[in-house]
Image 1 (cartoon, helix red, strand yellow):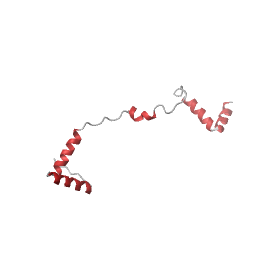
Image 2 (cartoon, one colour):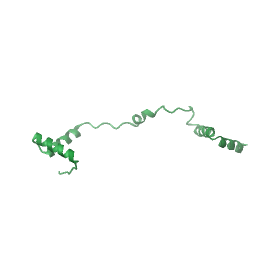
Image 3 (tube, rainbow, N blue to C red):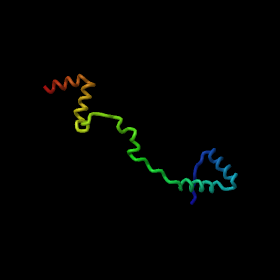
Image 4 (cartoon, rainbow, N blue to C red):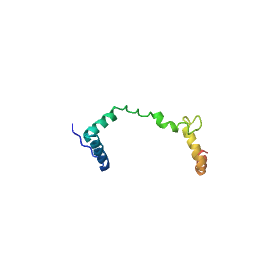
Length: 93
């Protein structure tokens, strides 16, 4: 099978110089390099846990946050926006 590969000029020059120094063709060196590269074991993709490990446990909140998320959000919102809390208090009356 014939395949065309585009190389930047410095890489092509280095390949041709190495091939000439070894008395081999550039194609033979490329084939050998690909065979070595493809024979290496492929690294396992990191798990979702490994990708997020640095983020786990960084954010803490109330233990019931999952169940009471709306109430907690409202509490935080009211602390940041006292005017909203005042209006909410009037509406509740």
